[in-house]
Image 1: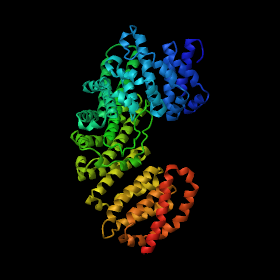
Image 2 (image 1 turned 60 degrees about the horizontal axis):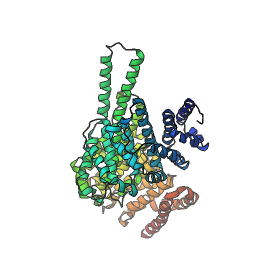
Image 3 (image 1 turned 120 degrees about the vertical axis):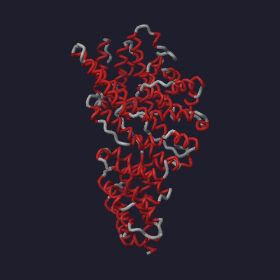
Image 4 (image 1 turned 180 degrees about the vertical axis):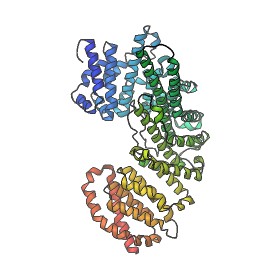
Length: 592
């Protein structure tokens, strides 16, 4: 890396770029201060060395994740990165570079640098502060002009800008200036049909929602935003993939009549595969962003705790969402009438539900590169849709969800989905499904749907089994909450229903056999909610609830004391559940 020979430096950077696919190698490189030698090569006199150095660092930001990004920021990788950006004038025009090879190199360098900047700002508040301090927005903003800079660079810039404009008051004030806003509006107004343009438009909508003020819902901007998102969600990603595969097959068939060298045919075949992958990947990314933006505009400032669903430049990074809490953070009373009407008039809820439905794409992937990546992207889209549905159900009035009967249909579909083999094998997807089920059943309970009283113990058997067999706390908690929500509906009936006996035994078994204190606490809270009223005491006595809870109390106290340090943020909730257990036992003992 320190060699005076240009080719040697280039080879060193390329070798590092390949090495960092192994996380263990990343840790070694970060510990050995290799970054202090590598990062200054961003501004190497050789464009090829610069590109290879940027590629190596970008790979570290992707494969090393948030932790690696934070270390890179601490090791001051942003100083040479900013120095590289300052080599470009504001509004620089690649068309003014006469040599095509040099022009392409400059675009590639800027694109790679932007991806690194995006990943660092995604992971580090310090990086965002440096972004603001160095006024990088003025350099990046003109590059949204895809007709000048090309889609690849413009999309990278839009991804970065969408990230840095989130809750960034200093930057938002600059972005609201008329010259910047007009550029965003012109991109949305352009009806170009490519998948690249669909992705760019969706990112621009994300930027607009980030920088919009409180008048967002009272002008036509809301209409434009929701209509754009609606059009993106209308696209059938499976059909995009199918058309590309069929188109490439037809091209290959037609091409067989011409004499070509074997290596030329193989190169053309690879290019077509890649093109198919790019098209469907663009659409999937656009739809994921659309679902995130819809979630964001359907919430109030007071209730919303940002759910981190934004992607980095890695297609491999998983969706990091805390789904357990999202449903409780939304209330339909906090969502403006304008937003609810816009969502309904554009049939957003129906389109989100369509993205939840499983798709069969394996047969289409036989002649496509990156099969695993595409499968994961479809799974991620399904998870995003489930999270969005979760929040729509919680935040919209029932009339905007198609009525109670439609919500029961959604519930039935989610139950079927939760028992499918694909979902059962994917815990992240199963968590999303059960979180959405939890939101739906809570909405139905709030609306006092009479159909909930038709639920039988057999209908909930899959949830009982899920809680016992699944090893993930969030899924167990969701199962408990779904059962207890239905239990609370039955508990409101003056005549005790035998269904509650099964609910009580289910919750008791969790409390007595479960090792996860968080799940135990959730089960205890559920028990208090369902069986708190006196008219249910006959069932409490029949299943010997108080006696069993008394035997649980000493061991629960010991477990909490032993695991206090490891419980972290869950400790207050678990400790409160134990205190409430003491009160519950005392109250039920006295009433009996």
